[in-house]
Image 1 (tube, one colour):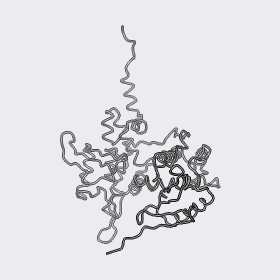
Image 2 (cartoon, rainbow, N blue to C red):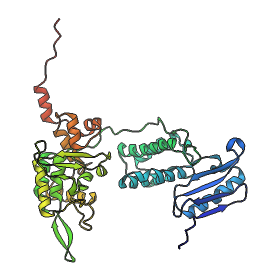
Image 3 (cartoon, rainbow, N blue to C red):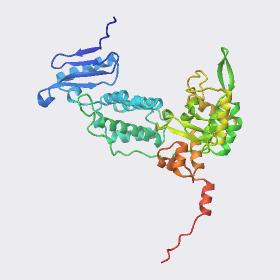
Image 4 (tube, one colour):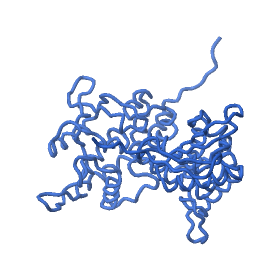
Length: 418
């Protein structure tokens, strides 16, 4: 019978200034505890907090530092103060895992950014308006890098648009809002208030939102079969036609996000042809939807059905197999970076200048704009939107044809007759 592995712990300092860091279960998140005489109405009690990580070496350093501070009567642990480093570690452990992989990667970058700028030991409630505005000015000028480092040489500075600055500021604001609602093991909220609530966040006055045109789509489609990929055949690499043609067709016809299209599986296809979906349908799963919402049996066009039929003929499969398998691992779908590479290659083959500020998302704006005039509910269901305000403000664009139609169908406003 194997012995049960003991949980790890380490204690620093002497009573009553002893600090213990420990794991509740082997390999789990680390915690810290100490005696706090202020608890239980002055009778004292044990205060426990989560460190938000599994690094035992860092936990030992924390225990030694806090034990030393306890002796001086200045311990963050005993007084219930939370540093930015501790707050971000908890956010990384508790909130980030609930996000999608690319959002987790963005969390990691922003944690490094803000710790570099503000420091691990800074108390969140001491983040000032000056800190906030200095960040805005620094990022606009390029003096602050995406990782929060100071760029001393003016020639090396790369300024960013307000939309990039807005995203980083909104993230910090969201972390503080989360901390206001999150309680530690003692029922103590991490923050009593959001220190940056009401601070101004710059808005992009002229956001880059290019729209794909039918002419551009057809030009890409004319050369898409020339874009190749390498797959393993009989132990050696062989060049074959990429999936770009079908991706272009599905992006143009469905208006869905690239991540949703790449994440399609054979089991998501609805090949029957009922009267309400004469060319079949697709059930878009929740696990690839930005809002984690499933969209059942959304009808598709004749062009989208033709693209699916080509896929079924070239690489028939069933069940959870990806519709667009990765060349190196057919059990996984193609990643967006390879799809981006294919699209850039097609742009060069077609002699097209890249659209600044967009690759695949321009197709989504194209679909939303072409569907103007259809009921909002139907457009939202077809393209996968839950908020019509986003559809109207960021995706549907004015175009000459609909503006002319508005002029030609304009009615005269007359005084009402009594």
